[in-house]
Length: 575
Ligand code: ADP
Image (cartoon, rainbow, N blue to C red):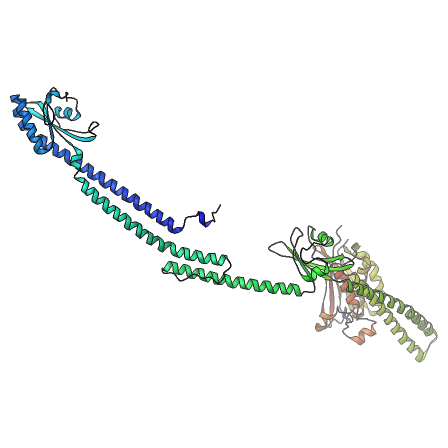
């Protein structure tokens, strides 16, 4: 866990200074301790050597005195020499008894045979010992050397001194050293303070800039630094801050722009998350669904839509008598969805009215047209000469009108059915068996053949039987109409989950520039010829509507003078 409370974290200045002072203090104590111990042990070694030398210097005198066995004379010699040398001198006999001592009466002194330095000397080597006198509370140094007379060691001369009196000479040096170290410590602390400030100062400047930016002062910038590192850090920080400021300004501008776009839209827009909660709405949405502007409650009709596991990309919802069309798109990063809603009630009503109107008009027109056609046919039976020609014209035009009315009605029907193709399992060979005979005699009259040999057996498509029949009729009818010689070929094959159909002819073909337009309503390439053939210009528009309404696609390729091929697809029946 990060500690973000600046009050609980020591400042950089204090951290550096504390570490610095600790380091200097440890060094000072360490150096003092090492120097003092080294000096002390060097001076102790020196004192020992001095003591040993003094003891050896006494040996000749002790040799001569000890043979006379005049202990009083030896004692006074020892006292005299000890005073001059500021050392205690003791002469110890072979049995350990003290013969002479410069500080005490030898008779009162205990046997010294067991003293370490004495044992060593009686073994023929100089002995040394350091002992702490508990009674005096002082450290004493002892050396003992053998006094050899003839072949044997008859006595031992021992010299000793209080080491503190010897090491007292070190005190001025130690004092001076302590003074120097103390001065160095004070200087180090002051320079440490200055250095720490120089290191921590720029950091706290930069930190204060960052803090100002955090509090919303986007224009805050760091002052140039006094060192290369500080300066480059300040420059980088300023550059980043400037970039961020621009970015934030751009974002806020773009946000305001998006808000304005959203509010200006006629369509109601809503953004919902995966839980179906509304995240963003515009005024049009709130008006459309009568929601309050403060706390927006999702209407039940929409809640049902938003809660679907896979949200539809378009559709219709009904809300309080209104018909509302919607489309949706997923926001790729967040998984939210954007919905746009449009009130299409008026359009739906209008299209229903149009459809009703067309149905009524077609019906009303077809009855008198059929009557006219009937009477014209009857009259023609007895007519001859000019009147027969006139009747032929009347008949042809009446038939065109009937065909036109029929096509207009069909187009109106397929347009209103768009996207709602009745999915039945339709057998392709059944359709062709019904459709092909309708054209046999016309094809024979024109001397062209119609073949349907390349048909994948048992091919079934998911479509509307009646409508698909109409597609084949329209395409084969056109092929027969616009082909004067050669043949018409029909094929059907499986491709993935689609059935692909082709109706090819060796007719007159379609000019390049007309190809993109042939599926438009009332578009005909050659108006007079089409009229002569009884064409309405609606056949391909109807065909395209039916194919696309059933989930397929249609296209045409053609070479003028050589023929045309109409390709269309339909989804295969699922079972
Ligand atoms: P029409 O009732 O006039 O045939 P369509 O919508 O069926 O109307 O066709 C539009 C136009 O496309 C036709 O007028 C014709 O010029 C052209 N067309 C359609 N099919 C063919 C074809 N198989 N060969 C040549 N031209 C064609």
